[in-house]
Each structure stands twice: as C-alpha cells, then as structure tokens.
Image (cartoon, rainbow, N blue to C red; front, side, top):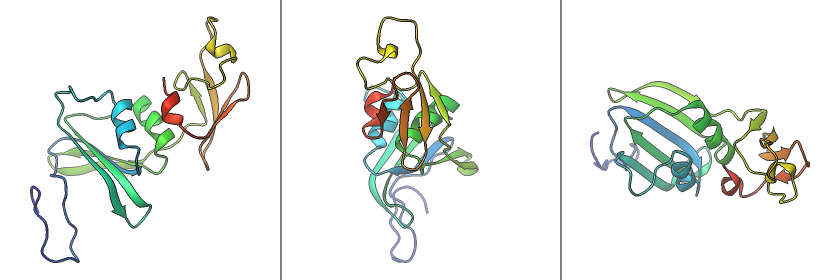
Length: 162
C-alpha cells in the first residue's frame, strides 16, 4: 500500500500517513503528547523538515495513541530520554529505504540531570547558584523526585522540561 490509500477490506490496516524513505517514526506516544514530542525535538511551524503527526489514533495496545514521523532525522539519546518522560510506552523506529532497520522501546533513565526544572520555586536548583537540576525517576507511574528538595513532579512533566 502506498501514499494515503485506504484499504477497501476493513480487516486490512489503513494507512493514514504516507511511508517515509529515511528517518524516525515515534509510535505509541501517549495520546495528546505528540505536540510536546515536537517541542522536545525542536520542531516548530517554521521547520524545513517533513513531519507527519497523527493524533488520537486507535491502538489495540494503549487505547488511543499519537504518532510522529520525522523524515531524514534520527534521534539523539537525550531526545529519547525526554520523550520517555511524557510517553513511557513509546517505540522508536529507525527507517532506511522504507524499511524498519531498528525498533526499540524508550527506557526511562533512573536519574535525570539538567533535563527538567524543579517545580519548587524555593529549590536551590532554581536560584542563582551554579546547581544543575537532578531527579530520581520512578517508572510506574512516572514520577520525578528532586534530589535537593524532594519535590515530586508527577503531572505536567512536559511543562517542566528545560
């Protein structure tokens, strides 16, 4: 199946976004988080990159999901770590010559350094001191605990990304 063709047989998968020649597909993004993924990747409306975004796509695994396809780009480890914070079930697919050559799930690191800003305005990491923010990570559910003040961030993590 190519392009935006829709199968006449409902038992076959429907392709809503065209295939990419080279690049990265981020699948199983938590529904509603695709725009935050774009922000993590530094992609805005003024980009020259070819980007496809699907929001609220039905998924047998997680109910609803978002999908982001970015042509001619493979992600850096730091970008994958940031994505894992807001989409802990995401999968990364590396595409070359229209084929998936590598597929892996994101993995939340046990510690984060300089990635998230502490939500506690009184935390030493939010002062003029030369201190880098540091958090320990709880994976299920995703919670970040500041090592300096013990403040926990469990919701709105995307808003605290540096």
